[in-house]
Amino acid sequence: MIKQQRWAAIIDLCRQNTSVSVTELVQLLRVSEATVRRDLQQMEDLNMVSRYHGGVRLNDGQSEEPPMLIKSETNVSSKNQVARLAASMIKDNQMIYIDAGSSTFEMLNYVRAKNITVVTIGLPHIARLKRSSTHTILLGGTIRWTTEAVTGNLTLNQLDDLFFDVAFIGVNGIHEKVGLTTTNEQEAAVKAKVIAHSGKTYILADGSKFNKLYPSKFSRLDQAVILSDEIVDFDPSLIRYQLTSGESRLD
Image 1 (spheres, helix red, strand yellow):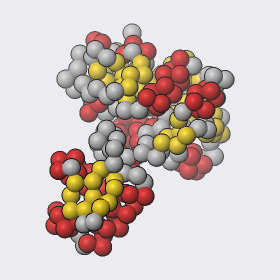
Image 2 (tube, rainbow, N blue to C red; image 1 turned 90 degrees about the vertical axis):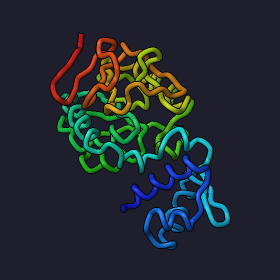
Image 3 (cartoon, rainbow, N blue to C red; image 1 turned 135 degrees about the vertical axis):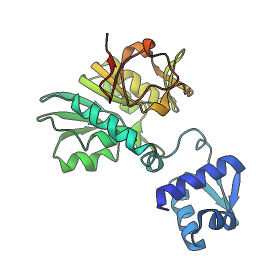
Image 4 (cartoon, rainbow, N blue to C red; image 1 turned 90 degrees about the horizontal axis):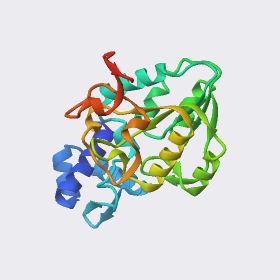
């Protein structure tokens, strides 16, 4: 079991049981006590969990959204398909906004357009953009370590002067009655302003995001095109979408 899988399992166990002992984790994960203690130390350093004598519990907020490290190992095949589709939407010479998140991170592997400028709040995205020597603007602000995103009032103020040909936004939930939602109020505000400043907006969402609802709304359903591998238990007439299969509704 690789580290990301162990961390995901630890978080799931803490959600189910409030807290979990080191001994239980050793037995359930089938790894050494040293490995468990090293994982817990690293998770605590990232403010994901709090350790106590003999065990661990989740920090406040971790029940709402898993860390970027774990999200990158979830629904990998679907995310890669959506990422390829998203990257194909970028044209030469465009000004692009690429949101923080695991799906937008993956799309950077597939971007082939030339002479583009990418604006992002995603900290892990920088290393991947460096590999391709892409002209990049990293917005400043407060770092939210769980999602590895830059956000806050400073970020919003910088966006006042930026406008995009196309934006690629991550989402936590797509709800038929509420719209597009995420877990954090500040990140929602950044997403909303980017959409208002973009000629076209694409939402990257694998099928698991449909019929999910989170506390902070950032967009109506009609303000963006959904890119997904499938639409699950959701009325497709309510959205504009393009699927990795080629099916679409863009009117």
